[in-house]
Each structure stands twice: as C-alpha cells, then as structure tokens.
Image 1 (cartoon, helix red, strand yellow):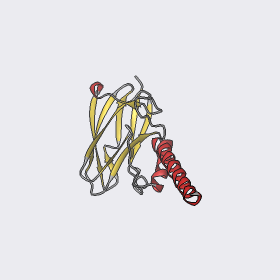
Image 2: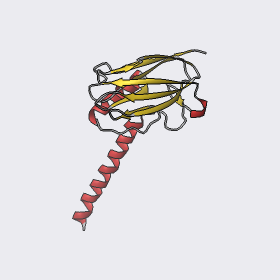
Image 3: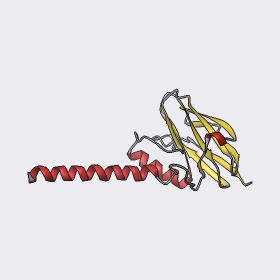
Length: 161
C-alpha cells in the first residue's frame, strides 16, 4: 500500500502544482471579471460607444495596427482571422505582453479565457469589449510563437478626456 500511495501522492501534487502554475501565468492580472487593470477593464456590451474591426493576416500584421480612442470609451473590437494559421489578439501593457510571450513559447497551445484576449482559428471571428479608463498607450499583439517577433503588434492610443 505504501508503494502505491507514494507515487499517487507525487502525481497528484505535480498535477495540482502545474495547474496552479498555468493558472497564475495565464491570468497574469489581466482582469477576469470587471476589475480595473493598467489598461482599463472589460466593457459592458450595452455601453459600447463604437465598433472597430481588426483583421489578422498571415503576413503577421493587424489592419488597422494603430487605433485612437478616448478615455472612458467602451469599444467592441470585432477580430477576423483572414489567414491560414491560428492568430490571436492580446491587449496589455508592453511588459505584460512580453511576459506572456515567454509563457506562450513554453506552452504554445495555451487556451485563453480572459476578456482581454482572443485566439482564432483560420477564417474565424471573435470579439473583445473593452473600456479604456486610463489615458496613454495600450498595446496589442499576437503571441503565437514567432508572430510577435515578425511584427504582429499594434497600439491603441487613449486620449485624455
């Protein structure tokens, strides 16, 4: 019984610690729910001020890559993957995106369940609804391996009220 119990205990501990590790890196403080972050907070669909469509392509570019919004504005981003490979759009500070890029290198098939991120298969469409509560720059990028390094990034300039 001791021989069976010890390996099961070790396997259970490793499973729980890896789930906690993935969860901690995955969430990264990007604002599950309605908490405000350094880049704003998840928006409410009924309070959307406007819609911006962003296309993602296999030339590793977003169109548009530079977006202007006003502080306090809630924007519905319609994201369209026009390419033949999986792409994503992750909102964040430059620091957050670079940290998450390193995690994505280790776990390239990571699934995102955060209001500030959408991963799309080829030909698919998704959305992010975001409220920009602070003036300044909000970055966005595709953190699939090799995409960011190839230039798949953009900036949202948030103008002060």
